[in-house]
Image (tube, rainbow, N blue to C red; front, side, top):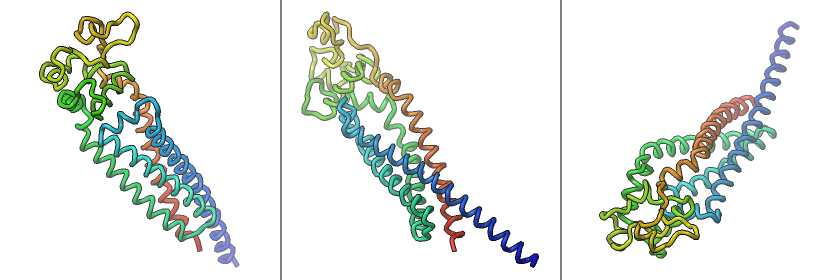
Length: 252
């Protein structure tokens, strides 16, 4: 009789624990669902943004690829969050196993992406962009994607070059193509008192701030926010995998 009561008590406790894991997994997967929706929103915003950020991204192959990676990851997390919620509530072992394997693949892919971003971080340095600007920027050639993108950046962020007007020195492609012009038109300040011809000859005030500092200052808050979000998402994914396996093993 005592053994039967102990066994029944143990079974009840196990059932309560399983129920707790089920609802905890549902909550974690709900956050994964929200994280996927957020990444999808960011990716779609970058692609359709009318302020010119789309052109900035399109000119850099790494950034351009990154947007579609964000879209793919967002869509996958959105789907996985939905599957995880359904698998937890319905206690479906097939859905739970499928969820675990897919989220494990995504987790490993995110780690690989972080490692690659760290390895290739030198492609996003000030010196790299300065070298690219000097070698490929042509000035007013709107048919060249690289040049048009830089004109958009300098106009949108009210900046000049990577470090400043000194980037357009005698060694730059811009000065070789435009020997009589000191700075591009995009570097000229837009106001009624500025004469464009005088500005191009460096006889009038130009924008002194470099675009590297301008862009970093503008996106600094969002970069830290994105990094914090990535850490939170990875932590949630770890807990979700643990809960999925516990629930999978606990379902009879």
